[in-house]
Length: 356
Image (cartoon, rainbow, N blue to C red; front, side):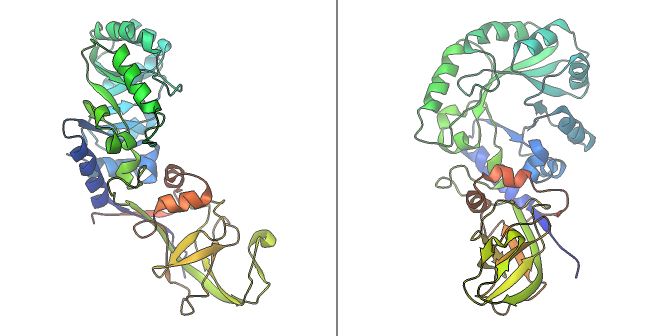
């Protein structure tokens, strides 16, 4: 039997999540974040699926933008975290890519270099994340410089929240107050809200919202709006065997059975993107029923305790996360976040796209 590990991508669920984001901010345009290969879902396929729903797309690097343009994506594309040199600025103009100016070097570079075609610039202000962004006190002068350039078609003001997924944090209030104070009187569209803020901070929605993780059905605020999981990572049982009480399973014998047990070997491992540090007890679905992971995750295989499924057999279906087993739950078990699990799905699992 061939080894089968697949990532099933539900584009209908993706579109539903995007429409939900739009419905929560009806006065805003939607900048869909498709960086890191659309969080592991396939950037070109996701961008095509969101045609007519997303007003623009955001990526992290210029090569991601090139790939979308080569795939026929004509919508505006924003480069979130690049530091473009002179040649790349010219390429951005030719490819109709917007850039984010988040420090003085790029500001000086774009001011000194006329471009063959006007480009959009998103001016990022550091209101408390302290990662990227110009100081708040520098915002008015930077805005004036960019607005005066004939080769800048539009300046959009933006910032990024550090704690929007904590509804009770005062940090978001402080960041909003900082942003509003330093941009007072500047006539420009604004983009502030990431996925969590879209769900819980309508005062941050402004002219542009930037849904990322929520598009893919992983919810930063699970008690808020329900989202539809987009990726189901699935595989099959390679083998089923009985072991005696006291027998160990996997590398270094890290798990030992306290009883006579039925052990299933699943055709998926960290070579596919399943988290290596998922501990014994992490849930896995076999034939639609939960069973515990046992032993260490290896490159190509994991093992599960099938003692409560005595009829299980080689070839039976396995769900590692997805529509019936939230990726957030697996992430918590592995001590990480859903973002990491989704973006770490490798090229080895075949991605299968469907509309529903």
